[in-house]
Image 1 (cartoon, rainbow, N blue to C red):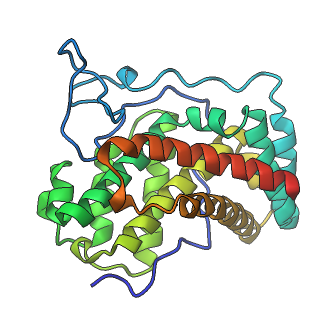
Image 2 (image 1 turned 90 degrees about the vertical axis):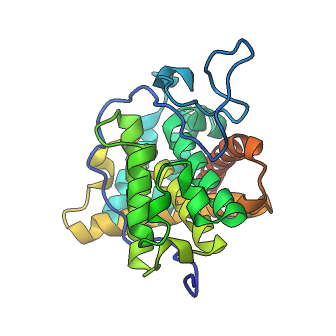
Length: 293
């Protein structure tokens, strides 16, 4: 059986080790659970779901990540997040996150700069869809992990992380990988059992966690380590990042719920557009609520 309640996420954020490094090019999108396809001329290329077939190179899945404009005003985002971290001021943290989105050109533009995170989230959404509709072993078969169907859920998701975003990639890939692993840690802390015992609610929570953690990680990567590491004590750092995480996760959850769609009800061809829309809308909400703060 699954957990008695959804695992909901950790209250203590983890400071990513990769922040303050330069932006990087995107990687290939993962399989979200449907067979590979080809372009109209018979050559391999992204299919109708925006996925890259096996054997394609990373550059085939997405356009290059647009750079934040030089007059981006990230100083305002950094200043507010630094102030919020030093004083545990949640309003300042929210304002800093909102100004990051504004400086990036809005939610859609900010989301377009997260191709690997969107691709990984699409892979998780496809897994959740297939888990409910086809069963745990079939859901994992797309990743050659069907033998792990009865293994502890955290072990399965770590293996899935290695399939969707292997270690040693670009910074953009590292953001997606960190989001997966931090969400696995949340799941393990909640005491979720074996993978084949997960509920649809557990899988939804995992998906929301991956989206939230990746947005949080992207903001910290762009704004910089020193903004969130301003307090002299580790407790202050953890409080600040937990507040930032809770704010971002709330925005993602609100936008997910507003769509009124279970992951299991999505058509396979609609997964990519659902994920893209969710990222853009959640970031728009971060901007709007940040300004209100």
